[in-house]
Image 1 (cartoon, rainbow, N blue to C red):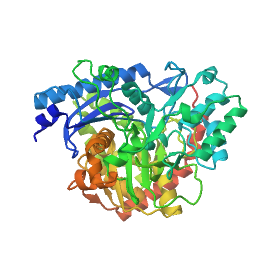
Image 2: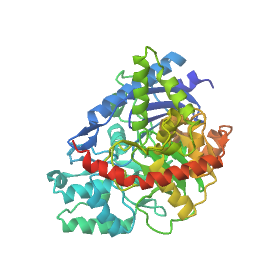
Image 3: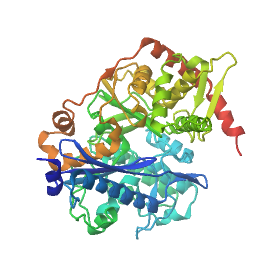
Image 4: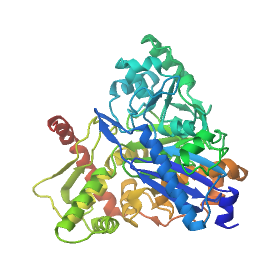
Length: 531
């Protein structure tokens, strides 16, 4: 059946993901082939010390993204979509959206980027003997209690961005298990919030005068393939301003960008891993067994089917790198040269590979915000070098590409070196991998393992949530999620693996030692650069 007929008959799956800088929609057939895309740019803001997005902007961005996708469908296929076989919503994990019993927003949306929850995260980690990262929803909720914020007494619902948007579209207060794992610890056997930890949390907050029941306030946990509701008339009107989209479309459980990243790279089975590289960077490995002890640098999350997964999540990725490329673009303009931004990125990234494997003694920290892996609660972008270092353009760019993975590498070193976690395959996806082979080569050096990038890597999490939507309505006949991905989606899609170069591995290790040694400088910058 051709694409036009599939769209007319609604035998398609639509995935929409709210990323840090872009809301993207991808329309696919049930085998994962991309039929149309749409996107809308947006950006977070630092308001009164809080990294946030206005939820009204999220709704406007949803409509703009869908409108762009609708136009692409009409231009490519000559039809207007009126229904889909299934739909899925994904977004940046973690954070805090609090509503009262009338669904009124009670406090500013706090994103994953905020690190103002240290006291709460520390106390909960000690209570649970389980790492609670600063950005997790339960840390945000408990910190609001510790800070005595008045709105807490009225909290009736707490959502992640994906779960909230799903609620707006369906009226169902549910969440995919992978995204739920960024709210509260998950019991992978029960496929639900860990009951023992729920009881401990409720007993703790009762001492502070809060009778809140976590399972009433947090969304219900669902796994991939479970019914998560259907698009309401209100949801259809919210999504499609044109009024052509009909209600009744089934939705898959809303997922976080970690779960969609795993899905989009076929990394949902044990001993597989992936790295998502963008505004934030996170690397994940699906485990064969639990880690031997608690690590504050490592998040324990799950796949969309609930399998335990270790994540090294860095709040900072490409923001500083992009700023430097913007500076070079400005210089080109000063010289009377019209530089295409994409070409500029490609040339600078490729040139970086001609630099010294250890970056010639150059060091950088792209910390726009705090970094949990290195226990620094505020960010100060920083570039440093010694007098005998070699300041060349290639070394400069290589240092910034390395440092975009710097914090993630520290977490991966814990997993691969200290814990001896087995990794058969590492997949890369996200904007950093658009330039062929460059970040593949650098990531291979960081993890000392082969790295592949699929042709679909640039579609990212929006494609991943579209696949989860397709699995809901047409994929379960193939078996488990990993079997559906293996048998129907990724057949023939495996990218070429780049093997680690021993010289690059040694160079990245040298850079990492300098990165660790220089952390006191970054901490001092936080204290000193306070204007």
